[in-house]
Structure formats: C-alpha cells, structure tokens
Image (cartoon, rainbow, N blue to C red; front, top):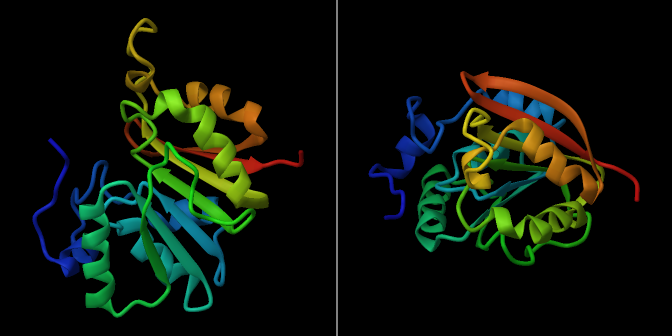
Length: 200
C-alpha cells in the first residue's frame, strides 16, 4: 500500500505533528547546513507532498527556485494543490523516478535534499545510478543532504535498506565524488548527513 495523507493543501503547511514519514524536522537547521541562500536552486528529491519544497521556496525567495521530484503522480498532485492554494510561483514539481536519469541540467542545483527516501526497497540497488546523477546536477561545492533513520543496530546480514547508518551512506556515496562535511542528529535516531560535491 502506498503512503497517503488525508488533509487539505493548507494543512500540509500548517500541521506540525507528523505530516510525512519522519515529519518536518527543523528546516532552518537543515537549510543552513546545506548553505541554501536566497536566490538558490534547491532540489527536493523524493518530495512526497512537498513540505520541505514549500519551506525551501520561502527560504530561497522569488529569485530562487525549488525543483520537487517524486515518482508518485498523486504526491505531485498534492503539491500542485498546495502551490495553487499558497499562490507560490517558484516551485516546479515533476514526476520523476530517482532510479533513472534526473530531469535537470548539469550543475543546475545549489543544494539537494533526500529525506526518508534512500532506505526504500528497490532504490539501494540503484545507488550506482542515483549518486552520479546527484553529482551531475550539483554545482561544484554544492551540498547534498540526506535524512534517514539510524538503523545501525539491525544485524549486518539484513538487507541494506534496513540498516542505513551514516557510515553506510558515507561509504557508498564518497566514491562518487563527494566529501562528508556534516552529521547532525535532528531527532532521536534520525540524522542529517551532509556531503559536498568535490572537484573531479
């Protein structure tokens, strides 16, 4: 069964409990860790109904842009409704699968966020496609933030998506041209790990 929410477009913005997966977690800390500034281009990869997309759109302002990607058309529809209700003009939602080539230009993004997505079954075996794509769309020095639940206690013999520790993520992404530059506990057992695109 696909994850769904049952609320209005406005409530996606105003609700502060657990609107999505892990809930919206200290967006200002997340955006500052990604060095997201006014006028920047932010990519919300696996955006769901778009909570972080909306918050990022306010953060980057009208001069900036937010590209929101999700493989579920229903999620994109929810974000479209939110955009219309909030009369926002700098969010660009698109149906896109993170297991394929991303619909962005080379070095288009200043920052990318992947929240509560990387552990999903069927994606971990496609990291070899996703991570080079993330590197391609980021500018030199651009930041990549990944939010996940720390399941390091799960035995090593279990599937990768059940044991996503910060160390596991770093070991798998650094070979693709990234350097780790931050690790923050956002909530008990939920972390933000930040990487920077490094020179080739």
